[in-house]
Amino acid sequence: MATKVNRATAVGETSASRLSPELLLGLYRMMVKCRMCDEKARILFRQGKYAGNFYSNVGQEAGEVGAAYSLRDDDWVAPSHRDWTSNIIKRAPLKYCFAQLYGKADSPDRGKSTPAHMGYPELHVITPASTIAAQLMIGTGVAWGLRRQGKDSVVVSFCGDGATSIGWFHEALNFAGVHQLPMIYVVQNNLWAESVPLRLQTALKNLSDRAKGHGIAGVSVDGNDILDVYEAATAAIARARNGEGPTVLECKTYRWYGHSEIDPAKYRMKEEVEEWKRKDPIPRFEKYLAEHKLLDDEQKKQVRDEITREIDEAVEFAEKSPYPAPEEALEHVWA
Ligand SMILES: Cc1ncc(C[n+]2csc(CCOP(=O)(O)OP(=O)(O)O)c2C)c(N)n1
Ligand SMILES: [Mg+2]
Image (cartoon, rainbow, N blue to C red; front, side, top):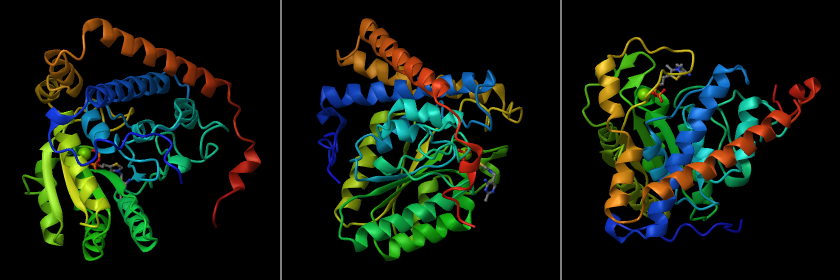
C-alpha cells in the first residue's frame, strides 16, 4: 500500500534537539487534538448521545501520541479499550471516529463494536478485543505475518499496567522474542487497573522489566514527557523495522478520570489525582515550545479554535448519520 502521508522523516532520531519545529508542533497539535476529542466524547456520553461506555485517555496523551505519531500508513496499531484516540493519531478522519462512538452506519464497523472499541482497517488500526491483553496476541500474530511476507512494517500495541499480569501478555512477548518480531508493546502504566493499585498488581518497580524474562528489549520512560516517549518509541520502531526485534516501552503516567465514565473512582486519593494533574503533559510541552520560541498564546488559541471547528463538524456528521438497519447485525459475524 502506498504511503499517503510523509511523516516518517524523523524515525531514527535519537535527540529531541534534532527534531524539526514542524515535527514538534505536530506532536503538540496531536496531543491537544486527542485531549479535546476525548473530553468531547466524555461530554457526549454524559449527555446520553451514545450508549455503551467510554474509557477516557485524558492524562495519557504523551504516551499515546509519542508512540504512534510517526508510524507509516502501512504500520499497524493494536489498541486497547483506552486507546480510541490511536485512530485519530493514525489520521483516521475524525467524522468516522465520532460516528463510531455513536454506533452509526458510517462508523468503520457499521456500529458493531462498543463505542471506544474502534479500529480503522484502511490505516491498519485493529479493532480492540474486550478481553484484556488479547489484542497483544492479535498484534503479535500480525507482526509474524508481516515478517513472513518480508515487509518492513511494524506493529505498535497498547495495553495497561494490569494487562502485564495476564498470561497472554507473556505469551505474546515470548513468541515475539523467539521470532524477533517487529513489535513495540507500549505499556501505559497509569498506576491503576480499575480499582486495583499497582502495588497489588506486581512487586516490580519498572514494568519494562517484564521484557527481561523473555529476552527482549525493555525501556521505561516518563510517560508525561512527549519527547521522552517519542525518542524511545522511534528508536524501538527503527529497531523493529530493521529486524532487530521487539521492545516493551513502559510509559509512566496517570488517567485523570475513573476507569470509565460510570466509575467515580472513589478508591483514589484526591491528592494523588491533583499531583498528577500538575504533571499534565500538555502545559509541560507548551512550556518547552515557548522556551524554544516555537509557540505563543495566539498560536495556542489558533490550534484550539481549529480543532474545535473540526470536532463540531465531526459530531454533526455522526449525529446526521443513520443507524444501521437492524438486520445488518447478522452480517459479517462468525458463528
Ligand atoms: C481478561 C479480562 N479480565 C477483566 C476484564 C475487565 N477489565 C476491563 S479493563 C480492566 C482493567 C485494565 O487495567 P489496565 O490493564 O491497567 O488498563 P487501564 O484500564 O488502566 O488502561 C479490567 C479488569 C477484561 N475486560 N478482561
Ligand atoms: Mg492501568
